[in-house]
Image (tube, rainbow, N blue to C red; front, side, top):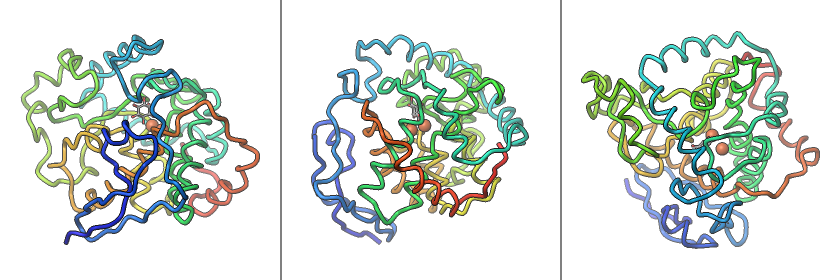
Length: 315
Ligand SMILES: O[C@H]1[C@H](O)[C@@H](O)[C@H](O)[C@@H](O)[C@H]1O
Ligand SMILES: [Fe+2]
Ligand SMILES: [Fe+2]
């Protein structure tokens, strides 16, 4: 079934050209209606990031360019199928620490992400900026506010008490391993130094997967997304499946922005992708130097954590 609804235009180019999102028609297949944002005036999409460049411009000469490129080089060389399997087993044990979601948010005060050309603030700022921007436009979707707050908590594995993983194993865009690396992936050329690139079992369109197998069955490059997904699932969150989907695939830009790897999706993935595209706008364009008053918003987020998570989680 095809439904016509009023929606902001989520097309990337449109987003980058406009300051304000217009109400445009968006065709959604599958009979699932995504609610309209409720705030008046729509979400404000800035033209430029805090460094004066367009968002996700990996070629722009900024103070972060070289570091970010070096980051992706190491990431692309080392994220192999075998590495991902090993890390999932190891980190899937969740035998490191017991703590609440909020305790983890506070730990992210110590974490800065070296892969990000748009942000050099401590991660807790980014979590609150994302969550609060969603809350303004989708006041009734409390699960989406909480998803905003926790989507990057997996970056905690950078800290020494979690094994102090290197940045290349934690942050940056993610992509499937076990099948060909799509050319739309940022700094794709560095995959030529990844051993899987030459392995015929892993370098075809489907690789070890099959048509419509479902993203759940696909190994993603290891990082904060997959780790936080495992934490949320194994600790039996009651977040809807779209929330878990957003957590696991929010860095999968080659899918949600470049439309690659769609042949691996099943029907549920197609539905959940609509929410991920909404989420991405807030994740990306809320990055700024504007500070949120943590103490002021804390009681609200504590109540959501209480609703969707146990008091203590295994990490
Ligand atoms: O640099 C960023 C950052 O690491 C984000 O947390 C991740 O979700 C993005 O995909 C990535 O490009
Ligand atoms: Fe992220
Ligand atoms: Fe994020």
